[in-house]
Length: 192
Image (tube, rainbow, N blue to C red):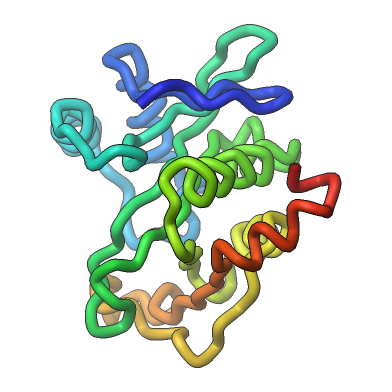
C-alpha cells in the first residue's frame, strides 16, 4: 500500500516504530470509552505484531495517520472486513479510525475518512462502505455523517462480541454510503 495524502495528514502503512502508538490507542480509557476492554502491553504488542506481519488484501492495510507538519503519528485508520454475519453480509467493508485523545476535535478523523472513501471508491472500485459504532458514540456518528454516510436503522444490531455485562456497549448502529452516492457527493467542496 502506498501512502495517501490529505491537506494535513499522511496515511501510511503501519511500521515497527508505531508499536507505542498502538499500545496507547489500545489502553487509553478515553479512547476506549466505547470498547469493552483495554489491552495490556503484552496483548497490544502481540496484536500489533500479528497485524504488522500479515499481508492484507490490497487496500486493507492498517494505516497510521501522521501529521504532515511534523511527522507525528496521531492515530490509526483503514478499511476492514468486519465478519459479522448474519448481521452484515460477508462482503461488507467497514471504514474505521482511532485517534489519540490529545488530537481529538481537530477534524482529523473526517479528513482521513474522506481520503479512505476516495481510495475505496475511486481506486479499489468498491460498491459500498459501512460504518459501525456503539449507538451512544456521538463523535463517531458525527464523523460518519460528515463524510457523507447515512444511517441504516434496519441493520442496527446487538454486537455478539460485546459481553452481556456491558449492555451499554451492545447496541451498534450501521451507517452506509454507496459508490453512486459518493460520486453524487463529489460536487460538495468539502468532500473533494
